[in-house]
Length: 116
Length: 113
Image 1 (cartoon, chains in turn yellow, purple):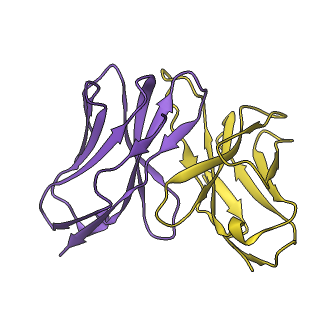
Image 2: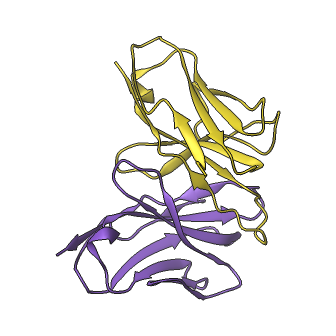
């Protein structure tokens, strides 16, 4: 059981280049999330999705786009990378947001991105 | 505002001692709280959770305490082991904002053998 898988694990980009980060989950979760983690800071939500075909903005959405064409996949795109987007990116998924069912988010191993 | 913060950014304990990691939250509407453990180079891993209608929950070697009066959350680790060395995050779920979690800054726990 793989859980949440992120690809690639590492990437170096030049300013202005574009790329897509892929997140795949095999737990049949409805909710998926993209976070970034910077030194000395907690996880900040970029975008999230409450189901196939839906996306919504999080706390720091600028410079990123997302798509959820299939329930198991959530893609994060950087159209024109900037040095400020150097970070570690984590994808997560959860079954439900309802407190009764518990919103335990399960995380992938992360993607380390450097923008030069 | 909506914020979750930790009192201590680093904590160093001796192997075998008990550890206490604290967290303050500011939103009274938060109805669910989670503690995560993040080891170096890995993603956060779920440890234990607690709903707002509870004040204590125990797991294996871990206990979470919730004090809603002062908006304070703590994680207690009994008989701390070297494998417990990691960064620990608390997260709060705002009941009226779907599945979004707000994470604290994190506390780094270092266990001395």
